[in-house]
Length: 341
Image 1 (cartoon, rainbow, N blue to C red):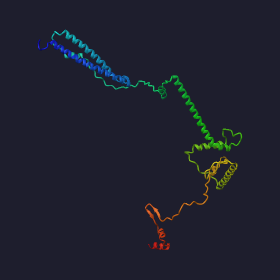
Image 2: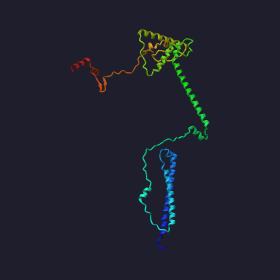
Image 3: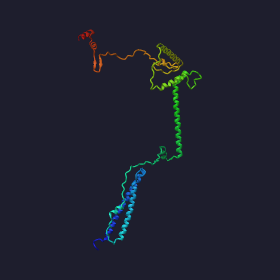
Image 4: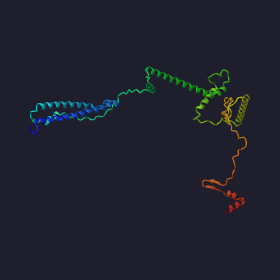
């Protein structure tokens, strides 16, 4: 037995080594493709497919190319094994001479991809339904609501909301009417003295004019300038009107005191508003009241200390008279000294 290996054994070793390397690389490629496929499925479950976003999914093409490569490699391995089995006894004479021009013609021409703008399409409709808090509570409690129950509950809620809004609107209207009636009740009592017009809801004549005037005044009370000037007339006539009106007020208060009725308090200096106040529109001529003089002794505000000098920001300024007052000198001596100076 010779120390050197035969040509058949050397050829067999050359064939078995690439087989082992190819098997290991195939296992690694399969594991990598499995991981890549799992990653692609996770991405599609969270964000959607790449085709829906306007991109090209290259992983699928790579997977198909790898399958084709594996198939071609397996076929080439089978051919090599058959060739090695058939040509084990024959010697290797080398590769046939192939011209480079033929190889270039056989290879396909690679076209460079043309750059185009990327278009992203958002056309998927997300029909995600988020249950309400009430439905979540029912699901947690184990009471799943039916479709009919949900519809009836929605209808009842809509009807309740409509009825509540109508009731609130009516209450607001009634409140406004009540406030207006309280403001205008003195005008109604002053002008509607007939039995036929007491229960009439519509106002006529002076009552209507005065109520409209008060409403306009209340609307323009915030921004409008109030006219404080009274109606021009001689002073004697105004004094006579004030005297007549104060007499009516005292008579009204005396009658109320005799009858035992408690009247509302009036601010100091204002006239009490009685029926003749609104009937004759007297406030436009004599005003709402007159200032009263303080009655009683003058209030003592403390000690009256005689100050000396004039206080300024630069200090206390003393005149010649102040100095003479402090020293106690007579005016003649002070004037004589002032003339000499």
